Image 1 (cartoon, one colour):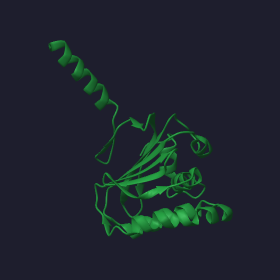
Image 2: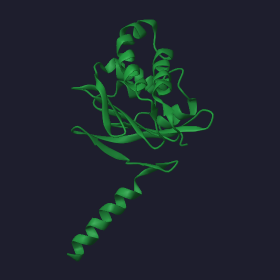
Image 3: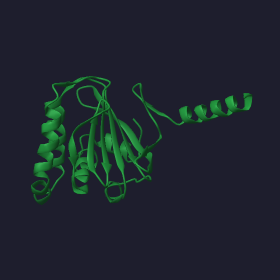
Image 4: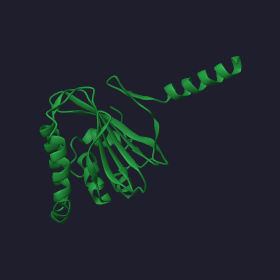
Length: 190
């Protein structure tokens, strides 16, 4: 029994030692999404008129540039924890604007209806409180799955091109914040 207890404590110590903490929010350094094991590619803080949210990018294997991230096969996760309250419409506008800012005209046309689907889903939420998690999962057999506060919101959004557009909000040529982009690519920490 004593050996079992010591083994359990060792496993817990290893798990806690590998957690990432940003602005008081903790994220696991490895997660399981479906049947895939994902690792933290990078993590950072979004600051605009003060710190807004912390964010972690999970991939099956580390990638250090946007092209490699977008080419990564299999499940992916963007995990955000809000530092400040935000209205659903403000968050929806920022994400849709970021997709449009980082997409060609042809991509915008192809993504238009799916951007609206995501925007309508998020904008329907009056206020998203500080401490709430917002998770965008790419699950190949389902599509993009949005979870806010632990609850799935809206329907799955089909197409890997949509998830690539979403990732470009933070990793594209005109990212939400350049030092956050670098942090998510594992090149710097916030």
